[in-house]
Image (cartoon, rainbow, N blue to C red; front, top):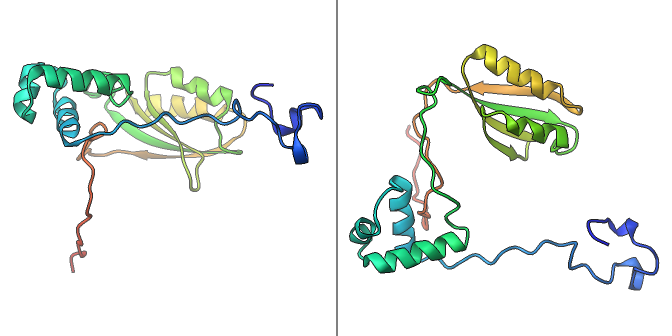
Length: 193
């Protein structure tokens, strides 16, 4: 039986102490993460800065030949480390200058089929299940406060939603995609007096 709970198994399907005999389809296996070395991180950082670079230019930047860079990029794509190549679009230039983060308070974790339908709106840039006093966090860009209000009306129409808190960005100092670098040793930085 696929996608069932333990209570859904008949007694013939249960093993010792009521445990299911075959649990292979119950637990999703995590894909094994590829080993990413310093050259891979340099390539990924260069691609994150400008994904339109040629393999030759990438090779010059990281100290490898173009064929070596091509092979590494191919491997990083196959492993899912590189999910895709995207253009960085300017929200204001596209008529969506209002950036907001919307915390949704909902019953349970809030990820209902109806709430997932909100993802069809192009104003939604991100949706995260979060820990804390909210269940779900949305990052949205809208044309105006009235458009944000219309988006919030869609959220409040979802059964189980008990409230929202919206945070409107006044200025953005940093907005970037996932970075290839990893901080190995966090510096001791005392707070200013």
